[in-house]
Every structure is written in structure tokens, then in C-alpha cells.
Image (cartoon, rainbow, N blue to C red; front, side):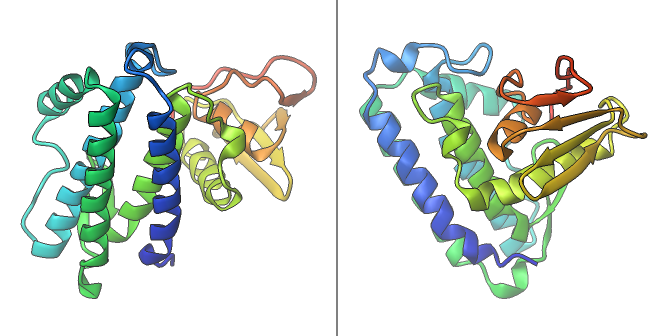
Length: 236
């Protein structure tokens, strides 16, 4: 069982890296497309900030026992992101820093007894408060890549990849819409899809993970028997 407090330091470092990237951009840069279809870089940054506040809502739910949804509804979530997307760099930075601080305070002040409280994420997935720091770290690291502003999966910390890759592969291992494939990386041997895999995909952990997440086309991976990497559905 992972101590949720052990994720605070990695979240802080990941957030600092994201803020540094944001500071390096111009206001015009924020209007450029991100790697997420239909979203500018400004949309990605606004989403990361609102995600922090949404997770604070779930921590409030865990602390009080009063159901507090991550977002009021899908329309409100989308409207908040849209409203924040066009802000200048200075405002984006201020929001990222302030929302990250609110999340950290909610984590550090949560009573020990509340960490196993059950909550539900935006998509209805069952979570406990203990899961939420990892959810936040995952959001910051993946969406930093989505900015398409110089931070790539190769820069994901090893400890992050050690948890991310088995998690994503584990989700895919239970899905019938995923082709059966064996994944191999240094020290990693995993199978996705249902059934006996006829293909083996081999590569560095960050390349395998980013392909599973739909962030790359699989360039740099080796397929055995030789051929293209198979198409994958969206992870979540």
C-alpha cells in the first residue's frame, strides 16, 4: 500500500517543472494547438489547474463524508476550462501555483482515518482518498507532455514510469477492445488485451507507456513478428 504522503514531493517537483515551462512561453504560444485535439496550450493549463480543485473536492468528500463531486457537472467543467484557456501567461502561472497549493494543503491536512474513504471520480470510477495524490501526479506529468512545449515522455521520472506503465497495461489487460499484445521493456513483461498474444511489442518504458496512452504513434517500438504496432483505443 502506497503512503499517499510519499507522492507529495514528486507532485511538487512535477508542478515546478510545469510552471517553469509555462513561464517560458509567450501569450501567443498559449494559443497554439496542444497535443490534445481541439485544445490549445491554454486549455491544457486551465484543465490542470481545475483538476487540482476538483481533487480538493474529492478530498473534502473523504474528510467530511458529504458527497462532493469532482466537478458540478460536465458542462461546468468544460465551461471553466474554456474560460481559463485564453488567459495570459502570468494569470496561468498564478492559477497553477495557487491551485497546486490548495491541493497540497488538502492532502497534508487530511486525517489519517479519512485516507480509506470511498469517493468517485469524474467518470464514476471508484477511488479512495489514498488514490488521489497519484491521480494528481499522473495528470500533471501527462498533460505537461500534452503542452507540446519541449517536455517529452523521455523526461518522465523513473519512479513515475514504474507505476504508470503497469497501471495502464493492467487496465488494458481487462478490455476486450484491446488486441492481445505482450509488452516488453527493461525488467517489464506485461500482456494487454484478452487472449493469447501473437504480437510482442518491445521498447523503452517511456515509449511503451506513451504509446499506450495515445501520446505517440509507437515510433521507436519493435514489433515481433515484424509489422506495424496495432491500433489501440483510448485508455480512459
